[in-house]
Image (cartoon, rainbow, N blue to C red; front, side, top):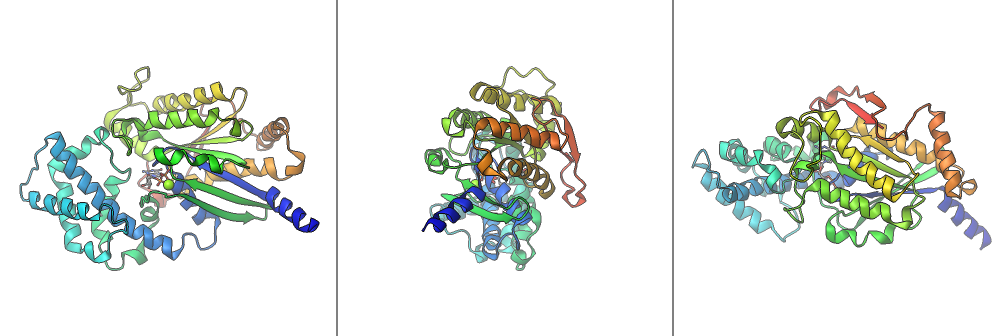
Length: 399
Ligand SMILES: Nc1nc2c(ncn2[C@@H]2O[C@H](COP(=O)(O)OP(=O)(O)O)[C@@H](O)[C@H]2O)c(=O)[nH]1
Ligand SMILES: [Mg+2]
């Protein structure tokens, strides 16, 4: 019995539980998907791929249906009245799907149907509605779903799923998903805990707080010009800051290393180009509206300030990433893993917060990097992945 308990204790010590937190749609599940592709043999399972293919069809339908509803609400006319009929059948199909929960059947997403959605998407009225997407809630990859929807309808779509398809499919996390893998280097088992991030789900987070070795907080950079799904009057950045405030206040994490992934840098760049920074919500921004580094620094500082207030004397490791890009996750999550390994590879000797901090500093100096220096961007890592050509911010910035 003694041996059994000892073995159990050893296994527990070798397990590194990393909790992913963040508001809804901040990218938690996308990070998990990437970790599966990066660290688990076989990557995503056949079932997960199947679910992603079905999700993409739902995502396309939900997006176009939202645009139809909002067009009407905003009082924008369709450029081509012929599209009126398409709108009506889209809304009818979408209404029929609500509450079913089982996802769209392949037969319901015919090529012809996808083509009408695609044509409607091109209508100047729908495009004008899309341009005003900061005024209502819309899925992050809306443009991708509609640009690509005809391909989703092809017979062999499920067998030909691309990297981008898998990362763009949006499935709301229900409950909790654990993803585990073992790494020989350091002899540690990583256990990632992915939770649902919507307001109602956050009340249940507390049951996952035990024995957490690192906290990974996901925050969307583009959120400053996006609305919250649960409440379209709320700004996503404000929502995320509120959640960060709540979490970092908790005693449960007072000695837990916290990593912040400022995510969706690709969307951030697009939105910043389109409409700049400086909104009604963030009036104290003094930088240039279209200056990416200034806007990024401003957003990062909002998180850093909260952290400094709630966890004085502790360091917040911040990474600027696009979770949908494999290379970004390889770099940022790789760094996170490395730090965690340095901290926990000899857990018995590192019980106190003080010694953890020492180890954290040591891990840093070992790699010759000044990572905890505050808010400046101190390093740019160049991503050489040409296959991710659509993304124009090529550097995974780390601070
Ligand atoms: N453009 C872009 N979309 C992203 C990125 N990361 C996540 N998303 C998308 O954001 C949506 C929500 O992501 P998800 O991981 O489900 O968020 P969660 O609710 O925090 O689990 C999905 O459609 C993702 O494809 C990113 O870096 N760039
Ligand atoms: Mg999720």
